[in-house]
Length: 167
Image (cartoon, rainbow, N blue to C red; front, side):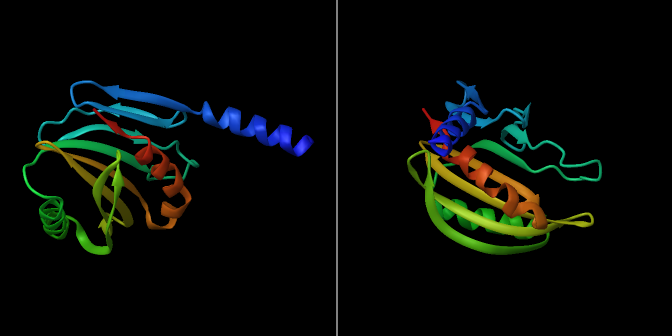
């Protein structure tokens, strides 16, 4: 009985650990951890709308994991987007290596998923980029972490991605 009660309390309190970010201009709504910092970007050049940044793990933590949402104009098919993304990654990311290329779901729509690594200064970063299309818009969520920390935060990144709603 004690285990059941403590598990119930755990799940009730866990559910409340999220804030909601909503942007009516881009028609998106997403949940993110209350302990993560939100940065509103609205960058017309990179198409980045918002980034959620993990708390620093220690004083020596020199890279904080992040999840970035971008909304960009795009008229084409999902595989066209994936091909151009791979080309852009190979052209702009130092030491880029595509680790996984697959089809998934994002906001109840078919989506392209790319997992890739690359160098950022001394750090090797691992990224998971998931993209879906609606109308003439491409909605991209990118999770970025150091290779060694990727698995530790991927479940949280998945929760953020799975909560995305596109109106």
